Length: 289
Image (cartoon, rainbow, N blue to C red):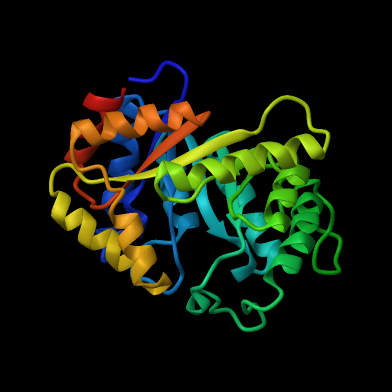
């Protein structure tokens, strides 16, 4: 159990051929178990449930738990539409959404919308962030008189992933903090340090929120590892094997992950699931809460 880090759990929206009806039940049981946040991991070109749909389902059946996308590949969306979706999720949840955003990596098949390809995605996200603020302020959209969101819509808090200097600068300008990769702690430490440095160079007060992501599978560890490997193989054999090697499939590995990420200053840790086995919620909670 950690007395300092906020401990969350991922929804199974990224599990290949997930049973979609599991998602709201998962959200309810996770909140009842005492997790502080519910996260999503998602791709467009993969047989799962979209981040926004999963977060909407969770928003409707919970009342306390924070909702976090970690991370949503924002440049695959038209900016005004994504701003409206995120505002809607936040509103339905009563202001519990934190949008974790990134530009996407080596998986070009995720850029499925015409005109929203991978080229120039960083510059596009920078422009999109300006649009998000405008939409959430209630300014008119589409050349007409109407805003896209209801009056009283707030500015949704943002987190950012990525390791490039532009990503870290974006985090320091627009965000509340940084989301690390699902990698060993030795690989995450430098990105956390870089995020702190970017924060300080930008003149931000305090410290950034630092979110660690860890995969787990307790009921059927082998199935969880196969699912996670399958999800990451699009990034290459080396990356898929590296991420799969971090999967916590025992209480001892969970406790080691908690200790290791606490040591590098993580403010949050979210345990993303390798399966849609609902009983894994309680198995995880028994160890980490």
